[in-house]
Amino acid sequence: MKIAIIGSGNVGGALAQKFIKAGHTVLIGAKFPLSEKSIKLATQIGEDRFASVENAVKQCEVVILATPAMMAAEVAQSLGDTTGKVIIDTMNVVMGRGPAGFTNTSDAILAHTQTRDVVKCFNTTGFNNMQTPQYQDVALDMFVAGDSEKGKNVAIQLAKDAGFAECYNVGGNDKFSLMEQFAFFWINLAMFQGQGRDIGFKLLKR
Image 1: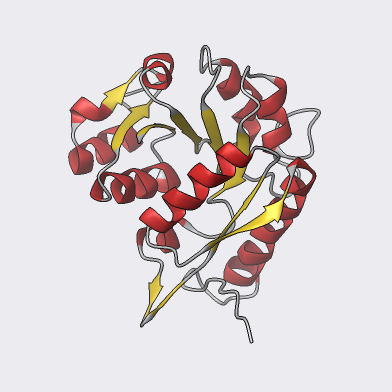
Image 2: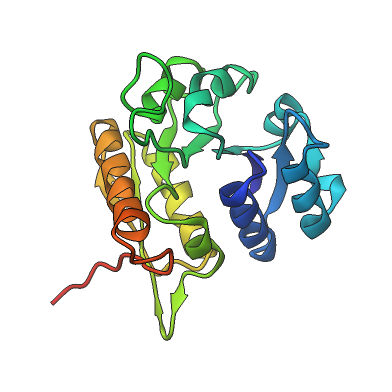
C-alpha cells in the first residue's frame, strides 16, 4: 500500500517504521519538516520520505492521522482532496483536550474531509507497543471501529503487518467514543495506576 502518515511524533514514527519494514511505501506529511521530531524520524527512515501534508496525501491511498487531538479538524482540512482514500485515525480526546465541538477526533475528521472511509485504529495502546507488540511468545491485539468496511479491512491488514496478532472489529462510527474510552483505560493503568507503559491487551477465547 501507499501510506501517508500525518504526524512525525512517537506514534507516527513507530507506525512508519513498522510499515516500511512490512514492505509498504510510506510518506510522512509534515507541516514543519525541519522540526526536531521530523529530523529525528528522518535519520531513521530517510529524508526522502518527507513531503508537505497535501502532497503526501495526494500520492497515497491510505492516510494515517497521528497528530495532537486538538488539531484533528485543522489537520483534516489540510489534507486536500481525500475522495476515495481511507483515513485511519489514531488520536484520542484525553481529559477534555480535543477538537472544539466534538467528543471524539474521528467525528471531527468526518466533518472536515470528503471521504466517508474513516476508521479509528492504533489508538488503544502506547507507541512502545506499536514498536514491539510481542510479549514473550504472545502478540498483543488491536481494535478498529467505523462504518467503512473498506477502511476496516485496510486497518486490520496494517495492524497484522505491524505485528499485532489480531485486529478486532468493535463496531461502527457510534463506537468511536468507546474506542477513545478504551484508550484512556490503558492510559489510566499505565500512567495513573503505576503499571507502566509495558502493558497491553489480548482477547482470549475459551
